[in-house]
Length: 286
Image (cartoon, rainbow, N blue to C red; front, side, top):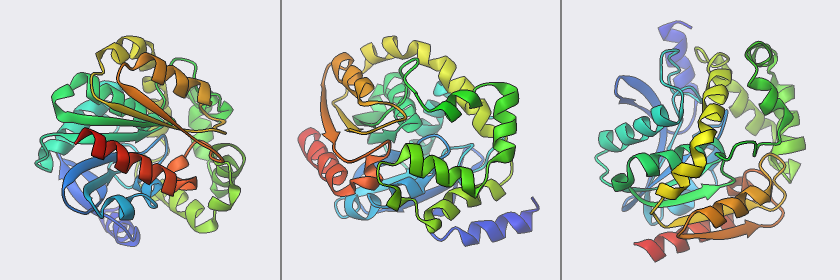
């Protein structure tokens, strides 16, 4: 992709802006003022995953939803450290760049795994933790395509064959409880990121590295001292509710909110419930 093509693509995004974090061009969607809240999307997600949460939370808080390196419209260098520690360092660098001393971290799926590791690695930078259908436990993901992608040859082939159709099927049949949320506009937003450089190369690397890091989760959970809110879609097919109950059991200062009629992304399907739970949680810790 040429520099001109990249610029044209950036203009077409329609939301958020681009900033530089340690020489990486990062796409962020920011709104509001006050208590800082960082929203971290899941595997192959973007800041768009939080489209129903940002406007509401921004009424009272300073909200920062970011596209992680390797995903969305952010830069995807092949030499980035795409593992739990590399992403925790990135979150710290993002906080530094934005002049934020401490923030509440909310992560969905892979974003939850990253938020957990950031909290354990940099506890002084985290004022509270929200895990939404979080990854992290070894063997917790039941999504077949996800597990196949961990295999180097299959992962590369699957990304080459990725299309609007495969995104549509994944959203409607596995990720979401209510397929009505998988509109053609939503599918377009997720598919458009594959026009960016390295967008088909980084996901298999990330899934292999983050899966390898899951072996550390039991020890990491012992390090979590921050107040933690766990939110889980009752009908999650990707990471079933059982694993949310495990997080609740293993994180000392935690509470669990189970969201009915919701799959792997309750912040989309039941946004009012999730927004209210996060707001109540922030009130309790601030």
